[in-house]
Length: 237
Image (cartoon, rainbow, N blue to C red):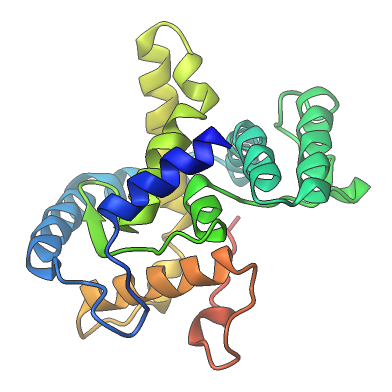
C-alpha cells in the first residue's frame, strides 16, 4: 500500500520513538509557551463563547448539532477502520452513516444506534499507531491543544478527509468549523470540574492525553492500573 509506505517513511523521519513514562516531552519549554497562549485565548474568548452557546442553545438543539457533526465524521472513521484491518466495524459505520443521513435527516437524529450500529471514533493518528508508528514527542499545537508527532501528521490527513472542507463558499466552511469548535468546547465545560484546581495543569493535560491516545490505539488493551480508564465524559444535556 503506497499510502502506508509513505506515511511510515514520514513518521520514521519526524517521530522520536518514545514510551510513555520516559522522556516524551523534550520540547517542554516551547510546549509550555504554546500552552500559555492557548490558555489565554481560551479564557478570554473560547470558553466564554462556549458558555454562552450552552446557555442560549437548548439541549435538544445542541444534541442535534452534535449528531450532525458526528455523522459528518463517520465516513472518515469507517475509512480508518478499513485501513486498520477492522472491516466489520468499517461496514457497520458505513451503514450507520447511510441510515442517519437518510432516516435521521442528515444526521440530526441518531436512529442507527437503536438499530445496533453503535458509533466509533477513529482517526489517522490511531491508524498510524496500529500500523506500528511510535507516538513520538509530545507537542502542544497552537490553538489545538496536546498532541504528538504521530497525531500531528495524522491531523493533516484528518483535515483532508473532512467533508466540511468541500463547503462553498469559504464563508460557509469557516462558519461550520467555528460552530464545531464552539460546540466541542462546550462539551468540555462539565469535564473541567474534574480537573485539579491546583498543581501543574500542563502536566495533567499532557499525561491525560497520552494515556487516552494509548487507550484508543490499543482499543482498550492497556494495563489494568491505567488510571485513565474511568475518565469517560458524557455531554451534559
